[in-house]
Image: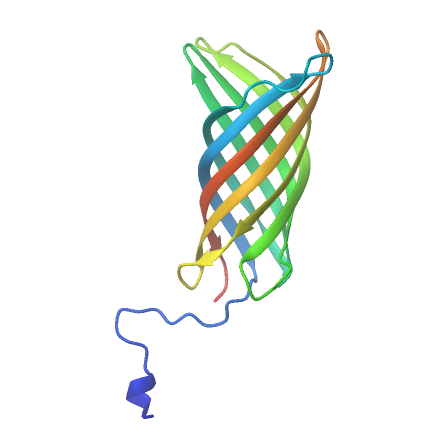
Length: 182
């Protein structure tokens, strides 16, 4: 075969080395199903699906591990009030098979359940948050990936007036991931 036949056609990008390396940044949107349960109650409430947004960034330790931080928020506009369920987490993404984009994710951090009213008044609770999930990085170009995810997030709160309660969120998201390096 001659050299001209092996050349990348004009207008296409040749992608070499599918490895993970360097710093990364991801942004995403999704649909999240939220429900809550009080300690003395019969279980969790009905699931309420609303939009989610996420931002995450970090560094690559190896082909099998990425570490970073993630902020994930579920938002419900309800008349004059905006309810939110947000998590700020330290996350680890483990790639069981380095040659694929599939990963498992776990994280721990702080959760915030809040309601903001027109006029600036807001109320809420802060507690513990944990996350488990899975995703896939589908390469679109040299440094950009399409990133579908599913995350299961749990929050635990100790309310000073009404006792303890929990929130949970199932998030189906789609994001864009950018990675430094070649």
